[in-house]
Amino acid sequence: MRNFVAALALLPLNALLVGYGWLAAGMTGWAASWDEEAYEPPLAELGVACGVVVAVGVALWVGRLRGAAVFQTVPLLVLVLLMMPT
Image (tube, rainbow, N blue to C red; front, side, top):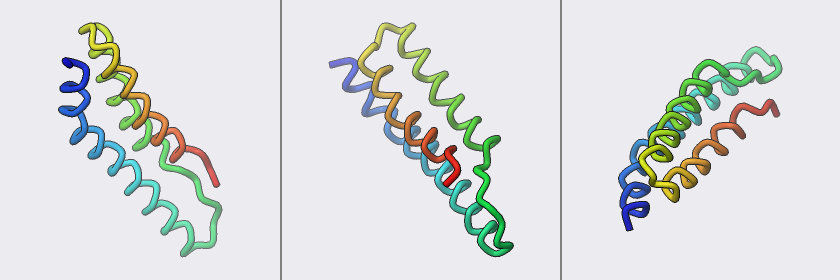
């Protein structure tokens, strides 16, 4: 039950981090389309968001909330997908 509550409590933070990464990637892609350049993902912004997600996951793991820590892989995978060039 504690894992479920922790995962639900982290949903707003995860939504903010994934939204920030999505916004950064979308704006970079939009800007690249104006110059007709190849899309290069904003690795600095996405890396910071990934770092925060990983830090929260490690803190949950150390706090013995293993289920919630495993749930943190979902936003991490989304952010890693945004790091891939198209």
